[in-house]
Image 1 (cartoon, rainbow over the protein chains, first blue to last red):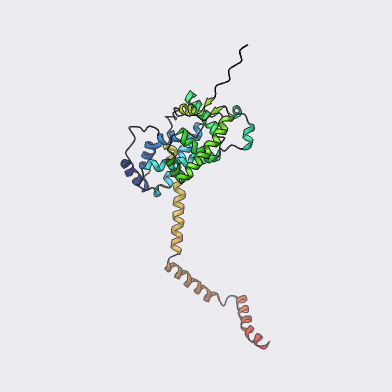
Image 2 (cartoon, chains in turn orange, cyan; image 1 turned 180 degrees about the vertical axis):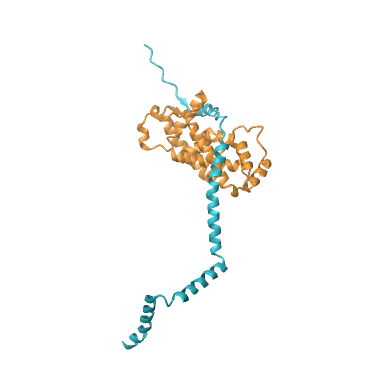
Length: 192
Length: 102
């Protein structure tokens, strides 16, 4: 699990703002965006290769949250509900940016620079490399392994976000790892 | 001559460990964009609610009764004025005896 900020607001504190936002108060929703956008950005950063895509995904996550705010129930923390929307945004991103069979004919250097507008740090380069390798997987597998390996999200939480049973998530993760192993071998990597 | 040693295999686990250290852009703030998009959505929602209100108005009994009275009144007022309609009504009246004759 990624370390949580000591300044992360308490769920009860969110409740007041969510209730006001549900009544149509835009300022209250603005406050919720301010509080949680760093968490959502960090999560979606594992999917998006460049800043423009990342910004679009974060924005769309909050717009969708506004649209379906009436459906939120206080039985789970608001941020958990937001993460669910973000995870599905990530899945949608993987589906939209699925590699076609013809993409294999294109050399990696000819593709869009994945580090565009992002700092060219070694960690960022490694993230780009990991995203490139994961992009060879089918969208569901890519989204699953991005959350599992890059975001270190527990499998049970991923299953909840995608509406899968735990057994289904385990089977999917096993199969995705098998496919990843083949891809990694082709690119000179070992899974361990 | 020494043979070149094989290139050490790269590790996925190591790659992901380092990749996790990549920090997301700290200056990313979507508040203005989100607010603008939500505000742009609002007029269409208002139009929908206006349409719903008009639709609900047509569901009112007093309005439906008013329209029915107007339609009946218009029919009785204009009945004698429609020659073609009168012709058709006359032929309709004849239809009974003609069918009986056949």
